[in-house]
Length: 179
Image 1 (cartoon, rainbow, N blue to C red):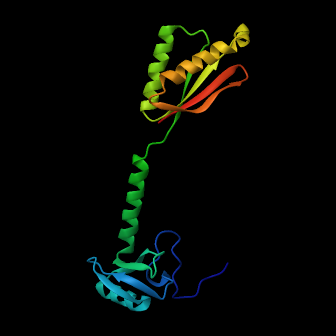
Image 2: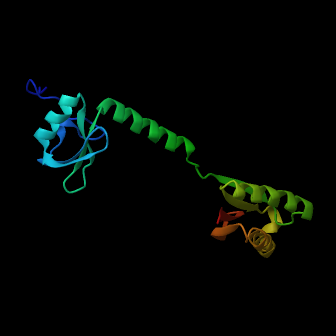
Image 3: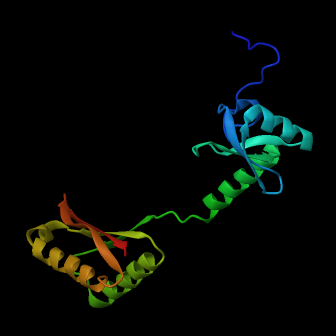
């Protein structure tokens, strides 16, 4: 097991580089009040930050020269983590909901299923429409295709067909997604 030499801290695994981990020889410095102090040597900027009691944190490493700020590293990482958690909490994941139909579906049953399909699409979810054939219904594939085209026509204003109707064994599948 290798040991690092005394006096040298470990490189931070995640987050921005700070203090002695900043690799650029010169940085554009912004102080704790948000004022631009200009471009200066990293060592000089670190000394100024320590005088104020803060760390020199690289906030924009891809700029030329990199931008560094006088900040408290722990507080900066904590706030960044809170912001990431909030963004993850508020994002909407798109689910695939499934509606099952039959080729000889009655009008009222069809209307009920379509209300549910429209509700799913308005919630921002994709809908997988499955039409199942049983027994002799397999010989009348055109009936199933007519039902699928009807679904497509009824959802035309609010959805687009992501996957056109296709046979998969004894089922016909179609996927519609919100526009």
